[in-house]
Length: 488
Length: 69
Image 1 (cartoon, each protein chain N blue to C red):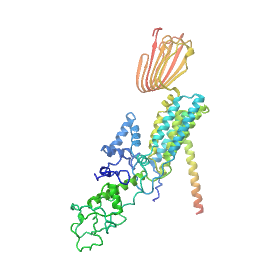
Image 2 (image 1 turned 120 degrees about the vertical axis):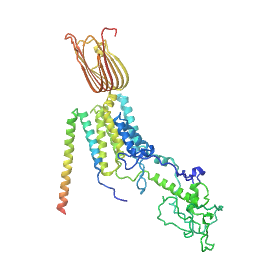
Image 3 (image 1 turned 90 degrees about the horizontal axis):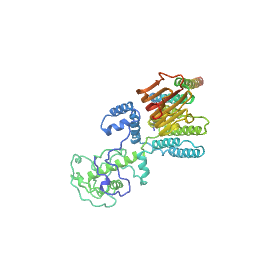
């Protein structure tokens, strides 16, 4: 429905931002959604039922888990739901965002300081930086808030325009507008209709284009004719009414005729309604800012765990922190059952659960790092009891290792590939477990989920020492080869 | 302005309690080395004790009001 936005008609005279009359409404989440209103918001955009979108999310969640990430992305991209009421001004921007950013920077600073002093792993710093980046993204201002912050301060919004009275003579002669031919698409008043109908003051501002008769009461110095003029619509609108001025300013051009005036009135009304909507983008706070408080608590717990780990007083693992995070979010969700505001906590709940699910891998990344490593061990002195890698490729060559007694080795990899070469002159006992992936142990292969594969030396020579290797892979492939001789 | 509805949403409350259970159990198991079942049992015991204490206090308060009234 094109109503002739001012942007098409020239520059605004009042410096107001261009009205968004006639534009497609921005994509929003819905307030009455099943979870956070993402499916309800995406359905109309995609032109399908929200139930189908919801089904797609569920399906993708069970097929690879992408549904949760897509849902989270939708929550981040879509604007918050439209407020159901516009009573009260939008609460001021939460200072918690600044607190979190400041806290994050402070934590990073402490981390850098501790790294300088104690030499902690930089992977930890990267994880913390990512964590706080996620927090900042989650707390980003809405699009309306951004546009409001970016826009220059708008002049005082004119009072809600009453439907133009158009009655009474103009206090000063306005520009003479040539009379336009009357349009009679059912809007022309019949002679029985009043000529100067002033709608009641409590008429809603967002009323549709006013079908009410527009104006044209003859000036007071003219004798009111006993019979209505048959062509009141052709009356020149030389009215210097403040509302008319605002309408002309909004429209960006003079108002020509009565219908034009009606459209301008509606456009101005819509503009002011949109402005009011943007100002009250979020509904009035229904309770405490649980999401912000939860984020702050998560930041505190994470920072505390890092400090405890760094100081080595109480080792706190990634799984512990992730579990506490889930419990904190759960506490906030439980409180929101009484106070409201559950919608903003749902993404936090999804994120915290994903973090908890990925905690073993994250723990490995923190402890073992990431990348491609190739380790060759030729003497017992070089041999470690355990090897760990978070993400990447680990090659452990023990083919030239000569052991004189039974030896145990633990190898743990989060995501990636593990390749071990064992010597052929010893008894080799292998125990491999993969959560997802494949296992190749010398001469046998298993592929699937939650694999545990043990290979005992079938013809163990009691005179030879035994090399026991236990591998633990979360996601990836484990391969163990045996080398006979020295040339490989 | 209308008074907000203070009736708790049962599904949201249960979801929150479920998250508390999952997170608490995981954290306890990871930190103490206990098994998941042991951790969940401890968590249930603690939560049950807290809930019982809360209910006892509430019952006492209600009894006091009845007595005064």
